[in-house]
Image (cartoon, rainbow, N blue to C red; front, side, top):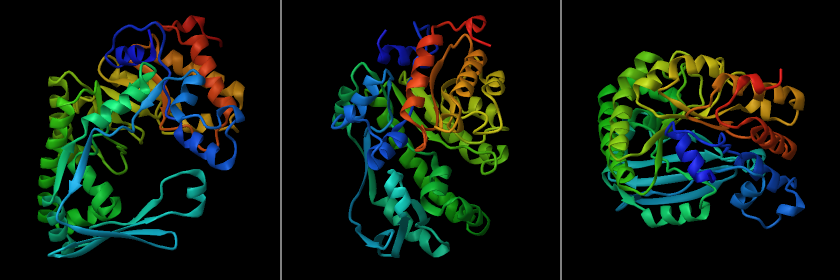
Length: 377
């Protein structure tokens, strides 16, 4: 099987010849390019070609399947020191966002921090409604097909549909902290915003369902401290189920980016009809192990991930990394519906030796079905 066949079979719960290994590792790669750690051999190579050469499958999560096109709105971007300021003019006033780009993040190729969101209070909603009224969702299937061709049979691409409506409010319109104040102070306005974003989310789902993509990712970053079960049930569950039903009716695999503190939310992941917990991040990155998760998920929700960021750092001893990796294999055995990857990403302070060690261990011990008795103790 090639990597495309292997990954696609795995996320559908079908037998594979070998567990696929397709980590997300661009954070480390980008940092290495910027700070001079990129080996001479790879100078001038594309990221995908380096991934191929290292023996890893390509995790294609950055392709464009659709675009949000805003029409009839004047906008401008300017820089003030380390801040990037974007302003939008509407008949109801001007709203803006501020993205902070500290030098240390720029040096590591990491995205900046949003320090000011469109909505700061009640006076901003009408302007934001206007922006949404003037935004349409446009398919970009040709761009997606070109992206898939760049991956070929060496991995699997899956588009990003974005967060469900309330989560999009939190992440893109208010910020997490302000969102709870808005729910308390301006609930009717928030509800109208969520309704408008649901229309947009439905349009995105329709494009995803009609697309050539085999799998689609929506939402993620669920965290019990931000999204306790009652909140998840009220605001996230039905939109995610609605999205899942559209994907399943179209024969798509539904992935979600499950890299947060999910203790107390494992059953909700099942209820949301998510097929694959992508970027699964167990202990010590969070408080629960893969074994804990599979007590709830086995036979229902698969995993793409499983190697937590702390053990991928260069400072983590190689012998302890091997012990951790083999324990992970014991927990997932026999390995059905598993793609081995990272809990979210190889960190910027990882190393080429750690990338190669992980690949070697997958090759050495990852034959499907995994036999725990064959693993070293």
